[in-house]
Image 1: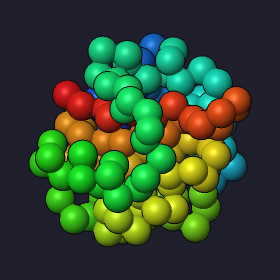
Image 2 (image 1 turned 180 degrees about the vertical axis):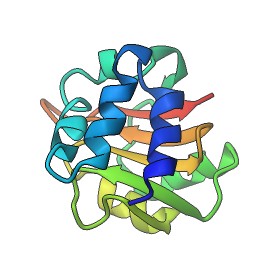
Image 3 (image 1 turned 180 degrees about the horizontal axis):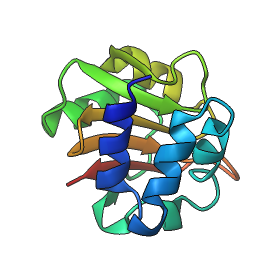
Amino acid sequence: MDKEQEKRIVKRFFAKRIQDRVIFELSSEKKRVEALNRLCHNYGKTLLPEYMIEIPTPNSDYQEIATLLKKHGAPNHCYVISWNEEIDGKTLFLNEALKKVVGFGMPSIVSCIEGSLAYFEAEQEVGSPSRFLLKR
C-alpha cells in the first residue's frame, strides 16, 4: 500500500470532516475495512459531490470506462483502493484494474491522475451500481 498516495487521494476527494479519520483507517490493517465501508451506502456524504461526475448508463463496459478516463488524460497505470483484496493497494494497468472493479459489486476507487482524476464505483444495491468520474 502506498500510504502517501492514499493520503493525497483522500485529501482531494473526501469530505474534510472525515479526512483525518479515513487516512488513519486506510493506514491500519485492522481498520482499513472501515474506510472502505464509508464508500458503501454513504458515499454521497463521504466523497465531495462537487467533484463527482456520474457516468450515464449504459456504463458497465470496463473498456468504455477506460476510454472515457483516457479522454480525460488517464495514463496506462493507476492506483486502486478497493474492497477487492486482490487489487487493493496496488498499482496496475488501467484496463486490468477496471476489469476487476467494474461489476465487482463493492466500492472501489481507481486513481488515474493522483488527486485530479479517478474512477469510483459504488456498492451494488438494486440494479447496477452508480459509477462516477472523480475530477478536480
